[in-house]
Length: 266
Image 1 (tube, rainbow, N blue to C red):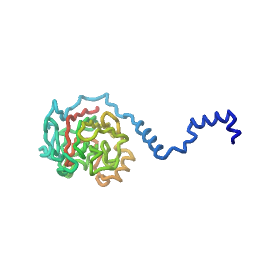
Image 2: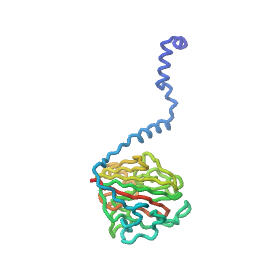
Image 3: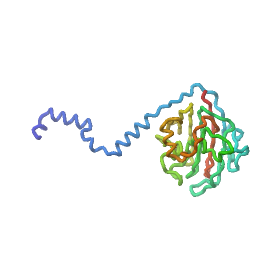
Image 4: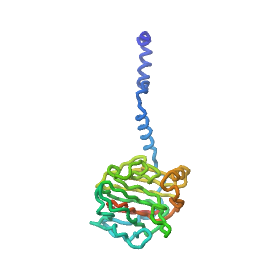
């Protein structure tokens, strides 16, 4: 062995092997997993083209459209009492403004209009530990008690302090209880985030702070298999409508909204 190492060709070979990671056994499983995760994060490309669009419909804007004319309460005409406009911001459960404060699960508000294919933009700010959600394709009818019985939910959450949710598929920007985001560029409680949802036929994209974080297909085998393992396993109408209202959830925590706008995709 020593004679081989004295031979320059073998020294050259050894150098090459070291450069190529011959000692790769030092790579831990965690390192490999991190590499796979990074590759997965970088693999996301927008599948939904929005060049062919109508103009934005402003559903709420703190500067130009500071009213709730575009909204009603779920299954009712009146706006539920815990929804208010405070200092120009659409605010829910104002007293649930700390981790140890919660006003109790309340009634959602929904858009008066129905949307099928669309791009939605929501500027929101969470209080510490807050939980809420954005739902789409929500159906209003007397046989539905809540919006989540029919509408898939883009989770809004203060990941760091929320006491109720810790699983990846229940974190901010997830499709709640179904798919985790592949990356999570969220800003903590007290800072403004921008949530985005794009829907074209059955293809759906979740965006957060201008980053594509999740893609899924509402009719794929994978989606249906995950549904069987989720909270929605016995909700036959969940995620089936293909058209419906946009909904904002009152989970009992204070959440503020600065701008909400939508543009249908033709």
